[in-house]
Amino acid sequence: MEQKTKINAEGGKQELVITREFNLPLELLFRAYVESDIVEQWMTTKVLKLESKKHGCYQLESTDAQGNVVFQANGVIHEFRPNQKITRTFEMENTSFFGVQLELLEFEKLTDNTSKLNMHIIYESVAQRDQVLKIGMVQGINMAHNRLQDIANKLK
Image 1 (tube, rainbow, N blue to C red):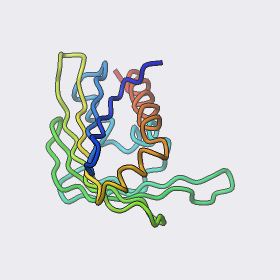
Image 2: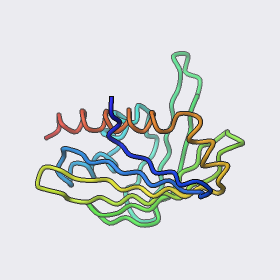
Image 3: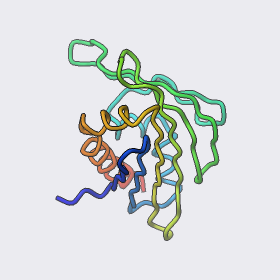
Image 4: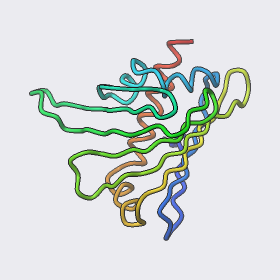
């Protein structure tokens, strides 16, 4: 099956460029990134905090069936332009090999019913970027974006 989310990982660089076209109006795609109830559904993680504004912050957490924390992440939103752009940091907690990454998300209207997400992610090093790719990031982000599309379709 073709992966709809495209990832460009140029050799020797500490960045990724990710693009995805959605069959969603721009406003709905943006909501899927800034409203905690929608984020929880497509990311399949608990949103502990999500302040969708400039200088806001967020915290995410996932637990296993026994209630043990298996994933924690947080970040700060540095730029927030509704339906246009979010610049934020992302940091996984309790990991020694992932540092803080910078994420620039740009939202683009294609038609009244379609939109595009352009993500530029910058890592601390080429090695960190390559490690993220090795642990299945390509498949993971495609699955997450497919869920986003399905969940947002129900909100139309």
